[in-house]
Image (cartoon, rainbow, N blue to C red):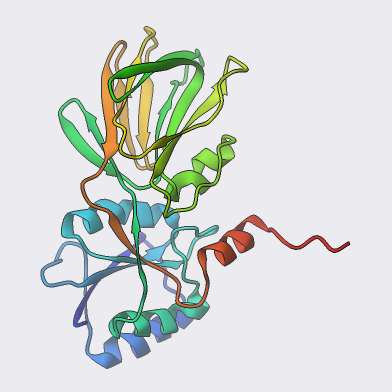
Length: 265
């Protein structure tokens, strides 16, 4: 591997330990480091930051069809799996081509003839006036139901540990081919999270004349959904390539981040 894109949070100060790891595993091995504005010939993208930075790098990685490796300089770090302590080992393995690549489901969102790509979730949420909204949902062209409440989350398995989890949705293993619909503060006891096959095309329509309803894509991009407007969500044509931690499994990361432990009797 001769060329790597470094994608980092703006204004980020890189810790000395990480600078040392970058120098030993990349610079001293003749790897050229470039920014996202100069991607020609790059073979991977290394994200320095938290999960938000990782999500902002996702559309670039998808467009270039390059694998992503996240080094966590944020807080929780479900997507930026590699800690600073693991960075040198992970980067050396990346250069040697020894890191495992996982394929992660992406969602393709079509809104007003524009197309966007989402790794974690699409969240349709009420505006600042605080009025509950009606969202009619269609799956493969068939009417499913209308949610009445503060909004609706459509999450991927990767995103199931993000906003979906906070809203009471299930954790879904990232290799599962599914999406989950999780209502946000629904005004009906029968509204529960619903898991659907990822191959199903989902359409969401704002069925009430509510002003300022927002479509939030991965917490980064905010679109406005007009009254009685409908938009589409479907599985993207390609997967996102994710480079995983060389020392910890998904279950170990899950246990650590969620504070799970054995119960001693």
